[in-house]
Amino acid sequence: MSFFETDVVIIGAGPVGLFAIFECGMLGLRCHVVDALESVGGQCSALYPEKPIYDIPGFPKVSGADLIHQLEIQASPFHPQYHFDQEVSSFERKERFFYVQTSKNITIKARSIIIAAGGGAFGPNRPPLDHLSEFEGKSVFYLVKSRENFRNKKITIAGGGDSALDWALSLSEIAEHVNLIHRRDKFRASPESLNQLQQKVEQGLISLVVPYQLKALHGKEGMLDFVEVATLDGDLKMLPTDILLPFFGLAMHLGPLAHWGLDLESNHLKINPVTMNTNVEGVYAIGDIATYPGKLKLILTGFAEAASAAHAIHHWLNPDKIMHFEYSTTKGIHEL
Image 1: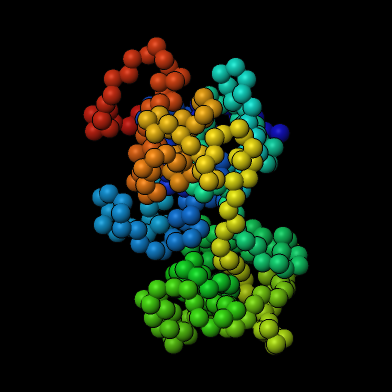
Image 2: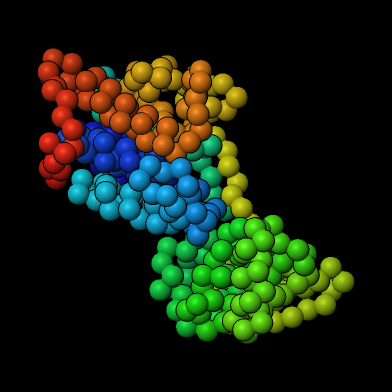
């Protein structure tokens, strides 16, 4: 068992959770962050890394991946500690501290909690393949943390939505070759993405493998040699593969959060919109998981909620301390 101590545990490393690190850091609050995925970004990284977002102030257009990258840089001066690929399984209140337990047997002693879990904890939908776990994290990945990790590789991508097409188009620029598998010959993507896909196919950079589905993995010691695919009629193909990226969406669920005694409304956490506090003192919720009358589910709304939660936490932890509000242009950034 590992043990840590901090001021704030943030549950969720999506854009709102990342901005909460910055807002807490500006007030001198240290943060540990827990997320069920393998890296920062939440849905922005997992579902639409290459898609443009148009409603972020100051960015007429920014991709999900670029937005997350900038938020990660913005949070970095405050040295957050991340705990990936795990959920918060429970927390216990003892006097004025919370003891947060994760699914990897990590305990974090914290003075407050911010839940920024989007629609709840989520993880990848895994294909039903024998021995899949032997290859996960070595040659089978559900997220692309860095394109450079896949340079000059033979990549097989499975899926028919935006994530599959976005990464097929992007990785085809640096990969030795990309196979794109889908059980149908039609993809759920924008006309522009489909046009780009057709161009890449004509250039020989991407091979369409349709209508096929994943059948088996072949390799040793966690490293792939071939991916076996099959049609519904039983026709088989062996695709030389170094890396498999299955993009079958995310399985979302409230998980243990549903049993923490928090006030729920249609699988969302009811909060005080002034302080972002839930019905449990010291536990706050921001972003898509939080609800209140008039709530707008926008990233920029979550950013404002992150600021409100950080200030409310600072006041709750220091009720006798008078804090004179200062703008960042005046205050600057002081590293923890």
